[in-house]
Amino acid sequence: MKGTQLNIIPAICLLAISIAGCNSNNNKQDKQVQVATAHDAPVIRNDELYPFMLAGVYFVHGYGGPEQAFNTLIQPAVKGEPGSDDFSRSIQAAYSRYFIFPFKPEEKDGEEEAKGTLADYWDIHNTAELEKSLNWLLEEGHQAQYAKYRKVLEENGGAGADLTAIDLSKYSLSKTDIPGMQFIKDHYAEFSKAGIRAWDIARYINNICIAYQAGYFNRGQANFWLKKAPQVVQSEYSDWNTYFNDFLLGREFWGGGETDKDRFKKEVAGMLEGKYSLYTYLPIK
Image 1 (cartoon, rainbow, N blue to C red):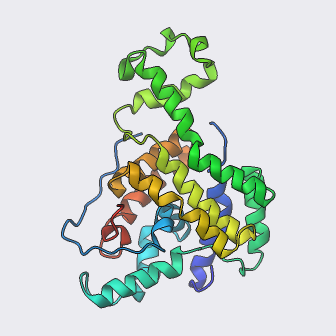
Image 2: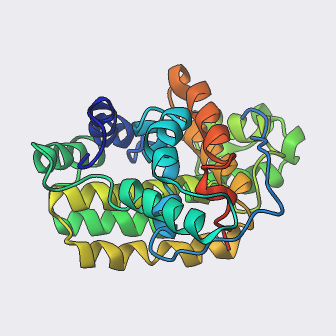
Image 3: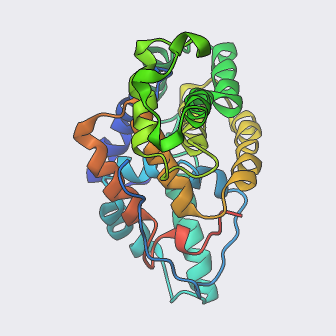
């Protein structure tokens, strides 16, 4: 990534490949993430940065986790203390540098790798296929499958539903749908009313960033699509904890690998708290 220190570059370059891969259209938790919240923290609002923060977990992950991102990238660029003008300006500038379009078209082999990522993991080979996929994430996504399973469970006992007693044919389902319903049943009370919308929205933002690097969108076109996400999120979520908890649940529902499940949960918890976390100051609505 342009402007990052040398030891950070490999992590963010791999992000476009490894993260997008676990975000594909495949139909393939644990306790809710708890993080400290600074209720008296000064409020920062930044409409340009906001959409990118909806996928912030991917960028933090690519930079090596919250500790690495905060200590190596953000903290050295921040001046003053929370509440001061210097702090507000400098922390926004730091996040703008590393979170706004983090995948740069001018990076060596960046365009080729980004196109490969979209092709391999999303079956996207041109702008028309990209836009179709983005519309799917924004309007349907894996939330549609979650909602269908949730409705079946609600009609058959909710968290106490006996999956073996459900007439699957009545709902046009098969035995392959049972693991998904079992996951929802096991974590029934952990989802917010929004379900797993955060999972779809975070991938939506991440894919726009990859598409920008791939050359499918110029900056103006990318911003056009980015601006569609905030109103969806703000109509369904009131805080970042709930949003990213649904993201983690959605990722597991989709089939996120067990090997990095705990890492993602730890990174989400770490990135949402602390002096150098923009989420501490930037309200979700």
